[in-house]
Length: 457
Image (cartoon, rainbow, N blue to C red):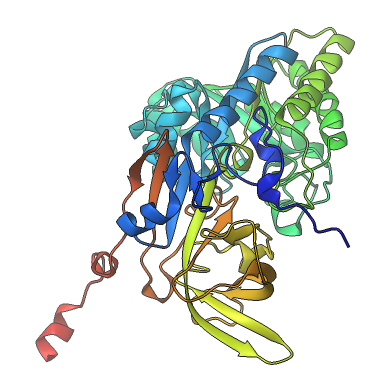
């Protein structure tokens, strides 16, 4: 049988990084070892320790520019790609996104503050969430950040705030368009049964409610149909649905100027994944909206989309150091690493699959064995890989896991009181820290021992 070519030898798609397993700048040095961004991974671990998150700046910027370029190519009206910061939120990411001309979506005061501190203009930030607190809403209003109304509770409080301030507030509403996508049930957000948004059947009642408020000005619609999507057909339908909602809103005197079609484009985590390119996805969305607007003789609205994973995931890798081995004859060999579910909760949460290789032997030269890679946490389900094929390896070797830029550091925890890893940015042979490594003592900063316990001791 012909041996399958390593994913590291596959052609890199420069224009659509979401179709690659590895960052654009991934290379194998003369010593046969892995580098990213012109930096030796072995040398980075010697300096910064492990586990270690690494982001490739060139891949990040290429992804941002792919969305902007495609929107300019296929959509004749104004457009704005907005980064879904839940994928990876930091001052650095906010700054890079802003420098590329993108907006940002946030779902908490923490994400809003991070965006503002990172330099994202407030008029390019949108505030999502199905249970926004009064404090969060007040923060958004104070900072002139557009709020996407998710439910009646949101609407009631915004009406009260706008009246108390005697101030007009521009709002968008989120609704569920009823489009199903073949994705994990936990991340399907566009069906009729969703915790997010108003039901489409309720919208005319909602439009009438808003028209009776004194200061709320509805000028935008939002819909999102899922995550890690490989299908284009559902997005062909979305444009017509959203334009029909514009027509309904117009009947109640609302001037809808913005359409936000959400995000959800998938990435290539493994060789079996075949996501559309960013160009194909944007073309499908743009064509759908343009066609529907022409059909109904509507001016083109500002087209917004909210990519997250497809911007940052492929740019990121995580490096682990191998520790213990446990062989169960005839069943499996466990290989334990110095991280796990606290720095990547997706395998235990979503049964997510990734690609990986040894840093010192990325092409799996010589003997190959199958290993189950276990995290160090006190959970039997803390497994990063089940039966992955690697070359012979030993304690102290490094493993590189690809596609970890999204929903790893942003979903990380301190389970078992394990500090979060450091995060680096690499570019042209230079590495810079963008998030410091936590120490065990950092984890005690917010612990408080009540006075009466201190006195007892």
